[in-house]
Length: 68
Image 1: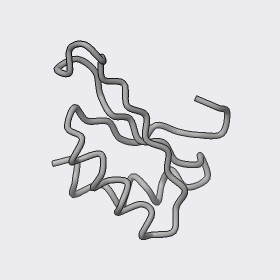
Image 2 (image 1 turned 30 degrees about the horizontal axis):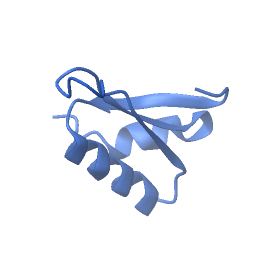
Image 3 (image 1 turned 135 degrees about the vertical axis):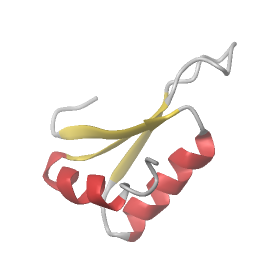
Image 4 (image 1 turned 90 degrees about the vertical axis):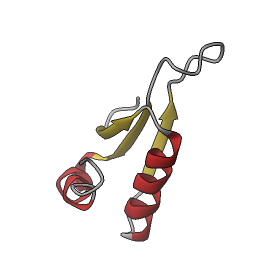
């Protein structure tokens, strides 16, 4: 990942990654989602959510309920 971005969330479930992305974008944050799932074996790998390092604290707070 490029410098200046922080991974704040990861999940094996695409729907949770989409929920996290929607929550963060609705709050006005720029979001990058990386799909790290293996193309042959979909049970391996995660979806990773990155935000600008300046938004890390706000993003973590916004996703607190989703991490449960």
